[in-house]
Image 1 (cartoon, rainbow, N blue to C red):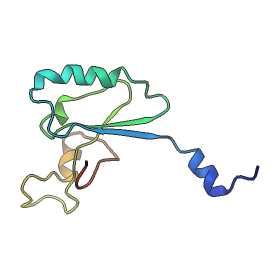
Image 2: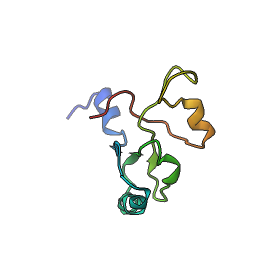
Image 3: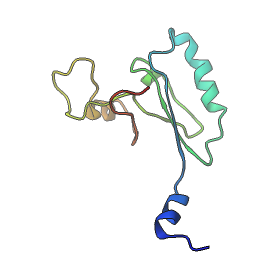
Length: 106
């Protein structure tokens, strides 16, 4: 079997799984259960990104290697952009994430 260079490159990629919590949970009291669900996942063979609501980003931490990814990022930077979050703000808050959804996530 002859495998092309492109096919070999794709076969060696590490899978990525991400989940967007949308506008959930209703109460921060539910966060421990949601975090426990993610903590129970085996992340040894996949990169896991969790996208909590902007209000909950700073309240979520994972010990199993799952990463926090904000639900959106304003690519134009800080300024008069109502409801947006800029990458500089996220870095300042200690969010070290290389992935996040941009725009609508359905």
